[in-house]
Image (tube, rainbow, N blue to C red; front, side, top):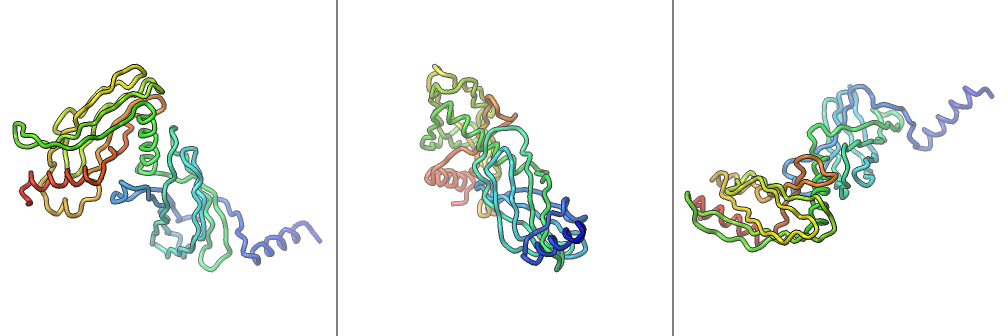
Length: 274
C-alpha cells in the first residue's frame, strides 16, 4: 500500500469515528471575538461571538479558550449558525490573574454545512477590551486587598450647597504586606455622579495608618426609566495603582444589599420619586 493511500484511509477512518480533523485557520467568512454584554458587567458572564458570513451554516460543538491571564475555559454543546447570522457562546470568566495583554488563543471544533468535524486553532481578539477588563478588575481588587483591609461603612445623607448628598465612609487599613499600592479615585455610574473629589492619592504602604475617605454621590439624572432598567448604577469603580497593574485599573466597590438599597432610596428621594 502506498503512503498516500494509507494517509487517505487514516483520515477517512478518523472521520468515520466522529473525530475532528485539524484544518488550520477558520474558513473565510467566519469571524470570532470575545466580549461582555453591558448588562452583565456586575457579573462574570462573557461570550464568544461567532459571526458566519461563509455562505453555509457552521455548527460549533466545542471550544477551548486559553490565556496567561485566566484558567482554561472549556465549552461543549451544539450551536448552528446560519449564513449571515451570529451567535454568542456564553461562559463564566475564571478569576483573572495580573499581567499585560490578554493573548487569548481559541481551539474551535465545528463542521461546515453537513461536512466532517474539523478543528481550527486561532488567536481570538477582544476588540472592545471588555474581557480584559474583567480580569484587570480581578487584578486591581486582589492588589488593593493585599495592601489593605477595605471596610465600607453605613451610608449617610447630609445637606450641602445644592441639596442632599449621600456619603459612604470607606476605611483602608494597610496590611503591611505590599508596598507601592495607592487608592487613586472613584468613578461615577449611570445613575450617580461623584459629588466629592474623584482623584485621590491614599498611600497604603507598610506602616501607614488606617485612612477613612468619603465617597460622596448625587443622582446623575432623575429618570424613572433609567432607575427601573438599571443594571450597573451602583457599580462604582475603585481606581487603584500599584506594581503590575495596568493604567487606570479599577474594580467595583463591594456593597451589601442594604447599602445598595440606601443608594436607590436616596435616588428616589432626591429625584422626587417617592
